[in-house]
Image 1: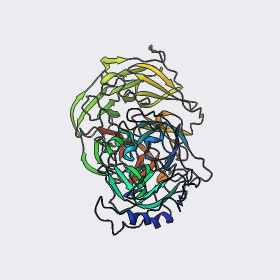
Image 2 (image 1 turned 135 degrees about the horizontal axis):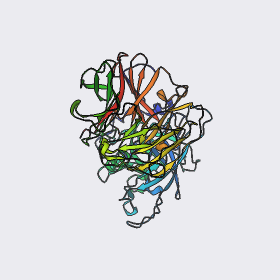
Image 3 (image 1 turned 90 degrees about the vertical axis):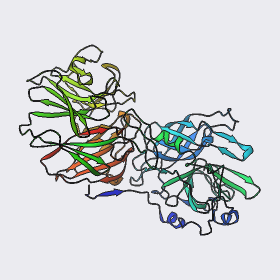
Image 4 (image 1 turned 135 degrees about the vertical axis):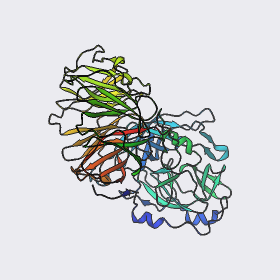
Length: 585
């Protein structure tokens, strides 16, 4: 990992596309103007197309359903945008028969020669107002979302969904996997792109029109992008004959469907409201860093991206370090994380925090000088919006203190009666792996086998045992977070060489994020400190620290590395002890 202030990655297209990415036509004129003659000469159909290079337009995918094959675009780690008619019969209003089963095929990773195309299934949702109004020579609300049963590969950077409209007469990039040639008789299945000129808009800005046929069969659901091919402006819908321009192609603008599209990309939760405005999800929650010095002093960094926008130093020094931080969680339900402590004599304490200040304290339970019971994690097992403490004793028996209160203790066991769990199984952390807003328990056996207990309060309601054994423990759990923003926890792993892997939803997978999305081992002088959302896109990012004290944040979108931030270097007397969540409401 290289130390630098900020680095963003944008898809770099091959030279042929760059050659097509000319400036907007100088004769563009005002919106709604008729540029049919000019467009017919410039906006050629994908007749003499440019095949995409291995590294070009990697967010373009093929989408297959019972209706056939279409093109589509990755717009979030687990979300693809395409056309509604790719799933529906040509019915009338209220009579559309639409399937929901989709298969999405990604192009291979160009950095991995011989890599296979990844194929994922998904569930399609057609826009509720989809209307194939052939009498009006256009298809209204012809968009559909595919939620993947998994996430896009790490080498795929999603397109940005645009909330604006390219000017009439301006050049755009069009792309799809459809047929090619003047009569659309060329082969199907190869990604091609070309330049085209926006001919006009219809129904306000709902429909973008090209005054020529620029797409062929199989391009349905394909992309209308800016010339840099990073922002998605429209989804190809249809071509039809008009008296004024002959054959024309039409697409549904993302700006007109922006709220509906973003509602599938930016789900809100109780403590994180996501508006979906702008390029990212614009979520309210933030993540702050909790530090402690060797002299016992606590410090908080209030973060906005990689910027430290404030600092606080609650409490005082404790040179003997007789109190140790055990975790963080929102014990009083105010939307801000509090700090869980334990004394060397076993006494528990909670600091209730408000904007960096200690506004209250609690001392549940009593002393336990032998530390017979140990804190295993902090989560919300009963979905009441308040943190609970997971304990385990020396025999393997679990206990949960709901809201951090010893008087509300419960004692879960495998068969939902109090009983120890064999000590060959160790708790790795807690997270919501099934998306029910209740914390679950992640285990690992000494033979390397992983297990998840799905919890409802103190009751085990199910389990999963993803992956297999790893007796050498070559891979180790680093953190639990939500990297794809689907409100289900994922597991971050690291192997002995420094290579990362993410199991999305706690299910075994092969997604391997890396710096600059390059392959290979990581630098072991950098160690994972935790995960949290620093760029307000409701997807967790990775916090690192170098042996020289430098802090770094990897901004993540699923398994895709999208940039790195470097707040500042801190002397080795300070250690990161946790991350604090602030709902920002």
